[in-house]
Length: 108
Image (cartoon, rainbow, N blue to C red; front, top):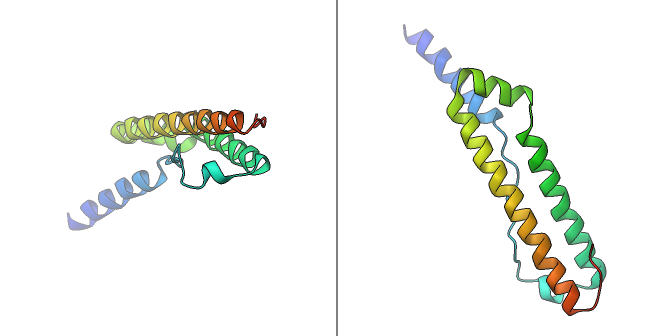
């Protein structure tokens, strides 16, 4: 009995560890206003990459399918996390665009 419970706990731990957890970036960072145009462009590209990775994590992956089949609450957590990551990346892009416009440089 104890062995079966241990296997079940390990299986659930594996599902949790495999769930998508894309990076949620801070939309505003302390050094943003002191960045050069080139640095703003690089930061903007990074924010776009974070958004793309989060969107990819939301898609149909082996881990997401397993989570949906075996432990659907993990799938809900994954969806919530990816949504938060996408919104944060979009907010960061808007913030960098605003600073770029103030400095008369194109960041897009």
